[in-house]
Image (cartoon, rainbow, N blue to C red):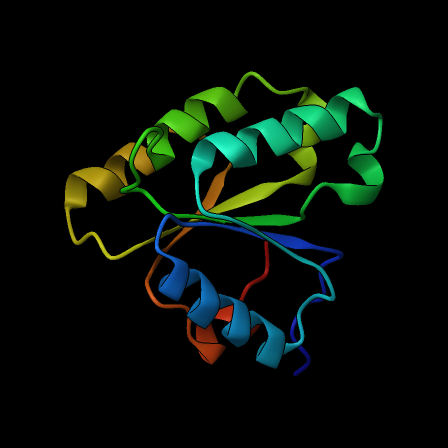
Amino acid sequence: MQPKKYRSVMLIDDNEIDNLINQKMIESASITDHIYVHTGAKSAIEFLRNMEKLDLADKVLPDVIFLDIDMPLMDGFQFLDEFEKLTSSTKKKSRIVMLTSSINPQDFNRSKKYVNVKLYLNKPLTHESITGLNI
């Protein structure tokens, strides 16, 4: 079975090695031709806001956002709070996958409170977790 194809995906993780590993896994799974990589949630949310302002949302917004929870300055949950303030079309277009090494059940339960969080995966991404995406 062929994996679902996405126009673009976004990785948000302060750990550059995790980003590199996850980027390579996404590339090898061939689920997209465009991967945006951010090492901070603040830069990622600014990118999304700017795409809305430039009216490029339909062409540029990622279909899937892989979001780390534990990051400095702005963590994954703070990103989700800011994401909730974006336009409804942006929120509809970009689905969020929480990507974390946390085994804390409170993180999992907290992430379920956000309607845009469609999946909760442990790091690092695997070929199976990527090709099995259907969100």
